[in-house]
Structure formats: C-alpha cells, structure tokens
Amino acid sequence: MRTIRALWPSIAVLSLAAVAACAPKPEAVSYKKDVAPILQEHCAYCHTPGQAGFVVSGFELVDYDSLMRGTSFGPVVLPGDALTSVLVMLIEGRAAPAINMPHGDAKPLTQAQIATIRAWVEQGANNN
Image (cartoon, rainbow, N blue to C red; front, side):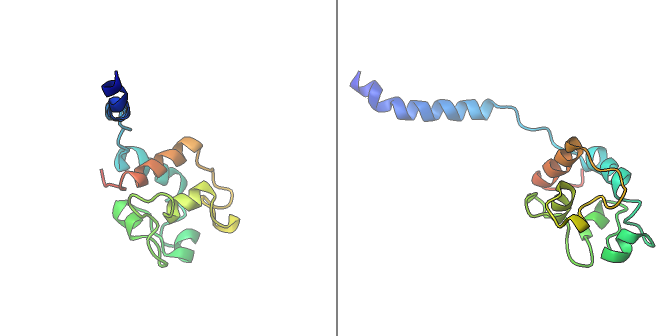
C-alpha cells in the first residue's frame, strides 16, 4: 500500500500525458483553401495598386508571397505568433480604431474567419 501511494504522483502524471497524447490535434488550416478566399473577399480589393490600402501602406495582397512580404512598414504576418502579427491585430480590432481592418464600409470578417486566420498564423502561416 505504501508503495502504491508513493507511486501515485507518477501514475497521475503518466495518465494525464497519455490522455493529452490521445487528444485530437487541430486540423491544419490551409492557406489556399481557407485563408486566401477570406483575404480575397475582404481585403484584396483595397490592397491592390492604385487602391487606398496599397497607396497608404504599400501592401499588395495578390498572393501568398505578397502577403508574407508585408507592407512598406514591415511584415504583417509573423509565422507562429498570432498575438503580435499585425494582420491578426488589425482584423481582431486590437489596433487603433482608425486602422482596424477591413476599413471603412467594408464587410467585417466573421468570428469564424478571424479564428481561421489566427489558427493559420499560429500553425506557422504555411503556403499550403
């Protein structure tokens, strides 16, 4: 009995580790299938040459490479770091109201769309 009590903390830790290992992994978010359509619907129209978003920021949003290049001020996506990625900050409304995106009268992203982009960034912002 004394031996079992002494082993109890180790058994508990191993049990929790086994349960965690069996937990389903979140599904990988695809740039092409999940993220690009959101950006095309809500962002690309303004972030093309000649449009306001491009003129102000130099941010051209035509494909994965242009997204990852970022703006004339620096990158907007920090792979693996949704908390400080500018793109996520802007779409979540964590920036100054004047620069939250999408801007003006544009249709805002849904919470599900924001969560998709956030998860994609957290997963490494892969070109998949």
